Length: 154
Image 1 (cartoon, rainbow, N blue to C red):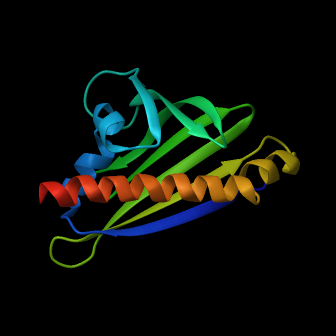
Image 2: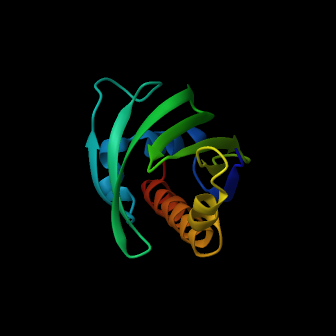
Image 3: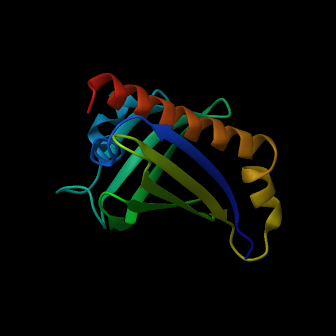
């Protein structure tokens, strides 16, 4: 099975703790992330391994809802979110790296793995237009998070 990925990195002028809080406040994403239309939290308790939610976004002109779940969580440095949709397995890794006093570099790696050798689906999702759409959505999310935490001065 081939895997393809998109990596986006962004410097945010806030301490890692504040950035972690914004990136893991699932209930707050509707307010913070302009690309998210709706969030439905499916699990109880705080953010961690096993946390599940449905996220609705508009991608490539279409509304899409995916169920996502956390499979790794190492506060405040790293977490991994996975999802399965139409036979493809998606993995997003969020890494927070201290970048000087009150600054954090966030690196998001988004990958997709189709079932078997069905490379055509992978090309459709991450090739060309699909990869640009993913990169643009992740970049917009990080810009939104930066605006929220930098504005608060956290």
